[in-house]
Amino acid sequence: MDFQQLIIFLTAFIGLSTCNRVYVHPFNLLAYNKSQCEKIQSQNPSTEKSFFPTAIESESNADVEKLKFEINLEAGPLGTESYMISLINNLGFRAVAGWWKLYNTDSILIPYVDFFRTMVSFYLGASGHTSSSLQTFLGLEDPSGSTNCTSKIDGLKVISTLNEIDDSLFSKDSNIKTLRTVCMFVSPNIPLSEKFVYGLSQFADNFYVRSVDFKDSAKAVKLINEFLDSKLPADTKSGLTSIDVTANFMYISHVQYKGKVAKSFLIPKHQPFWTEPNKMVLVPTISVSGEFHIAEDNTKNQLIIKIPLSDNDFLLLVQPINGNTISNIESSMKWNTYLEWVNIVTKRHINLSLPKLKIQRSYNIQDLLTNMNVSEQLGKNADFSKISQSNIEVGKVINTVDFELEESDANPNGESNVPETKEKPAEVKLNKPFVVALFEGTTKALLLFGRVIHPTNII
Ligand SMILES: *[C@@H]1O[C@H](CO)[C@@H](O)[C@H](O)[C@H]1NC(C)=O
Ligand SMILES: *[C@@H]1O[C@H](CO)[C@@H](O)[C@H](O)[C@H]1NC(C)=O
Ligand SMILES: *[C@@H]1O[C@H](CO)[C@@H](O)[C@H](O)[C@H]1NC(C)=O
Ligand SMILES: *[C@@H]1O[C@H](CO)[C@@H](O)[C@H](O)[C@H]1NC(C)=O
Image (tube, rainbow, N blue to C red; front, side, top):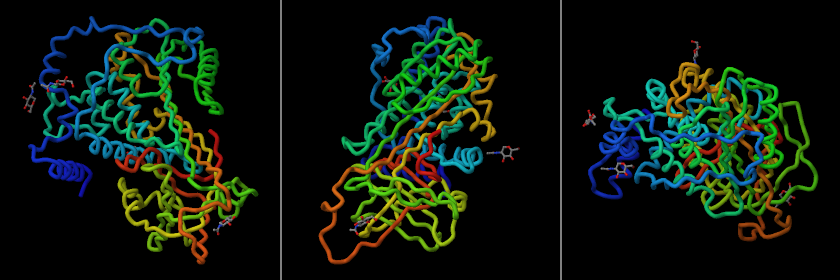
């Protein structure tokens, strides 16, 4: 079954099982409807309201700035969530090969949802050919093949659905925290479309827009780094080294996930971790004993462990065994391999040790698009007339991920989640590079995917 067929199968199945209404493809729920199309066609673009960002140097309301607009975003259309998640997982997977090629020896953390959001943000600002090609890139093509106004996606409806997916994440549990910050920088005197700024502000916990003079690049880099250091969570490195002086627009998003392994403790002494077959480092290591979903898959030579982080959210860690390698696991993956992993694990009593993780990664999405042979999406000839009436030249587009996995400070001799037995649990040690996937469990949205080569990789 190919990907499009699978979406149709899944969404049709969900539709049938919940009600007897006529099946409507989720695409149509996200596209402009007739009345919106009529409104758009009668609108005069020159009457659009503009937004002028404050200068980066200005101290005004420097602390908490979440733009407040009067409009309230409507609820996302019912029945679009599972469709959106399949699109996120699919786009992420199409990009993975590019990520592997660009960063082939390092730890990688690919922010699937954030990358999708970033591209939707640019879709919101795009017109004409750029709008069409971004829509295709996101996988949001009209299944009927028609090309009129009702086959264009309403970016705000996509944002509403993504926000609903977000709301189901990290269900009221203190064991996992998430924070998303978006910063946009534009040249002075470039008026931004208020509608565009409003749309993007819906995407983040913290959202900032500032003007900065790109022409004086050394000064701009310094000012932007200082600004990011003051707005991003402590000990995140902004690390911008250069900017494109011919650009006048820059987009930086930062997403932080911090999780705790329930009922775990830190082993007093650092433990060995083999970053390469004959290269060992001593690292802080977490120990937890209890019932876990695990699979020792000797046909594909991999050990899969599911680690719950909250009621719904969990990590899948996959370590090569029997001489297998990470790159072998990666290259044999399909877009839905994670779902197979979820399905083969079974409950077992184990005593697990795994490294404490602190990984920060930063990616220039422009490099990634170049690697995917689609650099024109955000390139010089792209049409972003819904970002601004002035000509927009997109410079760096950066997605930064900050991921931490910690112990929960359990008492080493305290109760575990299994009844007391005489039998000793099987010892499982994650002490070699492994593949990591962070899931939202109810929707199966993949938030992060990547590999850990060294447990403490900071940018
Ligand atoms: C069309 O979509 C808009 C925006 O989501 C909504 O307010 C309106 O009720 C819809 N109209 C129809 C006829 O469905
Ligand atoms: C757009 O095309 C579809 C399918 O061809 C058609 O059903 C619909 O009426 C068209 N809408 C408009 C606004 O022309
Ligand atoms: C599990 O392993 C840790 C460290 O390797 C050890 O301190 C602990 O006693 C073990 N727990 C059980 C129940 O075997
Ligand atoms: C991009 O183009 C190059 C050269 O034509 C080709 O080798 C490579 O496989 C392409 N990459 C993708 C992701 O399509």
